[in-house]
Length: 263
Image 1 (cartoon, helix red, strand yellow):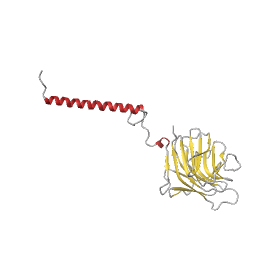
Image 2 (cartoon, one colour):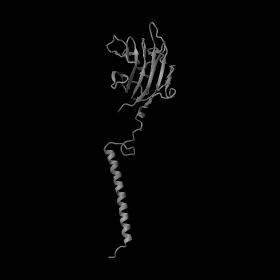
Image 3 (tube, helix red, strand yellow):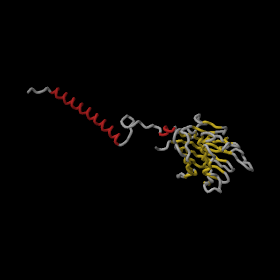
């Protein structure tokens, strides 16, 4: 048997090494892909489901506005003249005498945007209402016959106010009335407010600024449309005598945040 030249042996060994490296890479790629599938991760490279959005808020059109610019962003719809002064990392809304969201009295200044589907909206508001009725907070808005309000307000006592109307009578779930057992009283001038909207209900929560735990303010069974507008409002329909001085109520909002609820 003739002995193969040394260079042929070396070439054969090199080819074998290359083939082994290629096979190893293919096997590793395959097993790695299977591992991603087995533990439920979505790498975004095919394989297991479609890639998840990089922004979790994208599913409901969520956003955060910290009001750090020099004016109200163009994405907001301005309803009536509320001054809407952006300064110091907040927006101030000025509500003149007569501003309200109640039955046919619909003259409150609002800033509104349009998410979609289910969402959670939150804000941080500082306001000092002292007359019946004054308040400021969150609003879900579909027009004069369909709205939800959550506010730091004042009737005959300082309170967290939760009210709505949806094709029927205006309902006071949490009225600012010390004589009602469902009243939530507070003397905090700065509070955080939250509304969670699903296809069939709206849940309200609140907390004094600086406290870690949310407090429940109730749930109402209302089926609001997917493209319900959401935002903030200030109300100043002071009734009776004497009239407040000054006649304008000012509310400061540190941010408005809309996030998508977990599935």
